[in-house]
Length: 584
Image 1 (tube, rainbow, N blue to C red):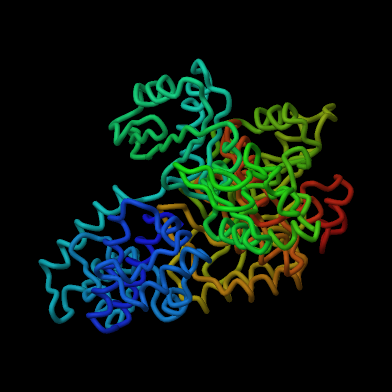
Image 2: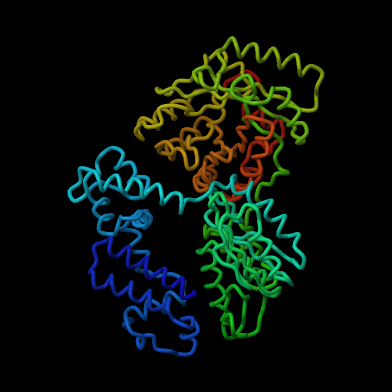
């Protein structure tokens, strides 16, 4: 670990210890040690290799020296893990809000149940912070303003929004004279649903030209720093870009290191240590570990990620899997999943047209799906209770079907399933008669109202809906909008059980504003035996392109083609959808 990483861990240890009510002298000692480490001229890793006694440094005693040695050797600290079980990690974000220190955060947690910034904002809005002893109305107002600033400066950007910004920049940088290799790393490469900073790793014979191309980019709002090996800028949308130029022989190691995740990297480093090797951003080495200014031992691999994984006895692990969810063990055993791909998808089962709130006509959506090579598709406009979305009542639904019969007559390039996204009403009943539900080829159900029901009420509502004999798919199950609306409060285990019992498919909604179910819950659903449908919820022809985002999130959830219903043939899909209907 670098000195910066060690210092960050010691600061986190101090913060969590203070939040936990630990001895203030011990807390201060952790903070002092963090400052000492960050101020060293040499890396702690180098000092330990040389046998240097860390306790000779002012401010570092025997206990803290041992903790630093453990951090450097393993990348983790047991005390931090123990504290994380007692103290909500979201409080580490709360104390980043200007004016909220650890003591205040601890009080807010213990007295009001505040565990993260969102919960703090809720407690301010509903007046609980203002009435808390030692706070008051003025303090609450100041905190509210500080939260706005915190979100502007530290918020993460939804993945779909980053795609639109980063691709033109990559095209520009790759065209620079002397650029040999250039790839994005970080959480963006792992395709997390939201992104903080964007890391770019490059090999270039003229690094100064590459740095100039970045700092001179039209969308750059501020240059944070520029040098021979690293350049950082802030784009106009607030996204930070960090460009690192490395040697050709280290490119794969640097890409691996900066892609992460941290826990995945720790697992790989531990694997290399067990062999007596060292892995860092410069390569995989046998013998002494290298640093920026020293050669170290013999380089075993480093130019490509694949050769590093191979040297460690592992199959290549795709970036979307690198979250320390068992992928290293699976790669060692040769049991990594064959992830579902865009080429596996045979159709899209959730989209809207101008019959409700879509921007393209039904025939335009059909033509677009034909152009994508789909074998089938489903038109699923909203049901009538959603007046703002111009939902279809039964008379309007009948007219839609008549139009489809007319415009599709004689066309056989694609099968169009007549469906609907039916609203789940407050009591769990469905916003369409049983007669019409039976006539549809596919019935999606979803929550669009009463988002603030208790977990018991919300769960009963959804369980009731998916228990209806004609329901096929639970669409965007959590009802969230990323960075705009929190997920509804569901007991997902109970919902999954009800879906399993009733043959209901779980949707992964690929729309960039939703990505719902999120990857962790999607993995849970698949491992429970539920089938998944990856759908775009497209409201326009352009929206059909979100399928790629859905595929990437499905990869993060380890989904294989057999887990996903819209990789199946039309006949197999129809067999799944028939349920209580006489025929599909």
